[in-house]
Each structure stands twice: as structure tokens, then as C-alpha cells.
Length: 290
Image (tube, rainbow, N blue to C red):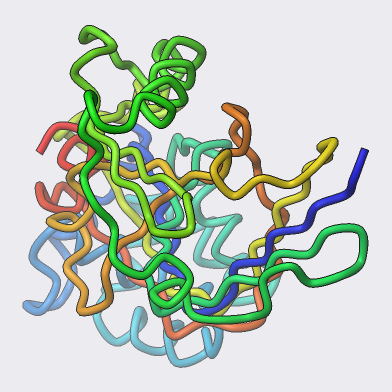
């Protein structure tokens, strides 16, 4: 068996989805009533609190105090106040914020890989695909006609026969959409609903956080031999509307020989984080259903 490493590197947006816990929802509603006129909604309160745990959080601490009647906040919002106190002491980060305030889909983060990222493929220590932009690696892709490319159609059907329940696909296997690059790599674009996100497809109390990461995604597999025609990307059909961006969206999942590959993630930095609350176009529901 040969050891294959596929590295995808660059600025890759990462999304996490959750639901605001009811007890924190109630306190956020209360906090609005004695906040400054710039804080009008639950989202405003959450964003203020989020700012206390991000890098450079001291400015976030000051901003929170400037926009909140702290005596009223302490008396009427004990859970939020306790969290703020810990953040002020410097003991919390953004993941502690998610863990405390939200019910999060921890195992189902969504990476949106775009074609300005780079790809390198290494087999047994030697590069078989030297580092290059994914746009150059794939080149132009073409829709696969069922009658003209039975080999690729067979691969597509085998993939969905194996994974349709994992991604909430229920239509007949003859209806799938496949694109193929000149190097043989395929892209499957469907209205997928990953099983782990099923409980987060709500438009009430939903929260979406975006991590604009500078990251390495390392995918490891073993195979008798490496065949590019067995490599593919799986796309959310609605990701382009969900995340409007100049670079072209390539996929969110990588698979080889019909097996989804989960990457190791090495984050080198970020271009900033953002939080949206009950914003339809940035909800898990919109990503999955439109």
C-alpha cells in the first residue's frame, strides 16, 4: 500500500453552525433593554460578547462596557455576566464562547475550498502533483453526459449508493450532477444535507460563525496505486449563494475511491471572524435548502 498525502493550502473559509441556547436567548433579550441605542437586537448583544474573546479582546471588553449598563447586566443576566467576567480575566477563547452559549455542530464544520487555494499531492514521499493553484490543477471542467462517459457515471453512482444516507440524498441515482476535469478529477454538485447538520437547519435562534482561515488541510489515504480519476470533490449546490466570493467554489469534501477523507487542519492565521444570528442567507438551512 502506498501512502498518499493531499495538501490543500490557502485562505479557506470555515463555517460552524449552532443554535442559541434558550437560557442565553432569554438573557440576551433582557440585556437589549438596558444596552446603548447601538445595541438593538439579540445579534448585537452576541456580537458584543463575541468581541470579548477574540484576539485583541481587551478592546472588546471596553466596547462591551461602553455599550452596557453593567449594574443592570450583573443583576438581570447572571449567566452572561459570569461569562463576561471570565472573558475579562482572560481565561476564555472563541471556542469556549461557542461551547457555553450555543448548541454547536462540533463534528460538522464546513470548509469552502476555492480555486485560488493550492494543491499538492505526494505519494510515498515524492510529489506527483507539485504545488499549484487548484484552478490550474483542474483547468476547465465539463458536465458528464451519461451516455458518453459510462466510467465516470459508474463512479458517481457507486459513490451515492454508499453515501446517500450520510448526505440526505433521496432521489434516484440516475439524476446526479457530475463535472469532470481534464486530469480526470470529478466534482459532484448536489443539494446535500450532511447528517450531522440535520438538527441545525432551523431559522429560529440559529447562529453561523465564519472563520476566515489561513490554513493547511492535509488529507491522508493509503492505496495500492494512485489514480486521479478516483479523486473527487463534493460540493454544496447552494454554496456559491451562501458564500458570495470572487474565486470559484471547488468543494467542501474530498473523496478517493468512494471514501470521504477527513482532513487534519493546521491553522496558521486568520483574516477575521464573524457571527450572524437569525440571518437567513447565512443559516445552515439556507446552505442546505436555499
